[in-house]
Length: 158
Image (cartoon, rainbow, N blue to C red):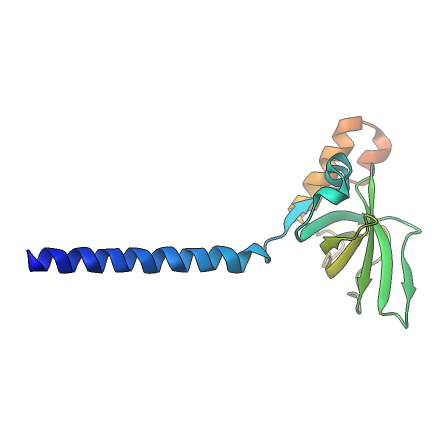
């Protein structure tokens, strides 16, 4: 009877430790998870509905990129051919961040609906586009079916 009691206590303690570790992992990762959305997805739901960190991908809208504050403040708009999301980034952006090129910005929306980016990721070469960004651009072009929107979408290379 005594061994059985010890085993039950040991199993209970192990279960409590595993449950505690899982709870700590969930709480710790909660702020680190950022879901990918396209500008059209954000327009459909509204920027105010996103309260956690989010990744927005698409192309930098031509004519929207502006530098300020000694080159450390960058404002631009991300587009998928249908909708745009204004972005502000404080820091030195990657060299490959250029108008008309693919980009993924990660951050949170402010009260005005502008994405305050904490990280900006640019494509690495002329043929690369993140799969999520490609899929979002393709969905936006297919919704309308217009040839002008299809010009934004090129098959990504792997």
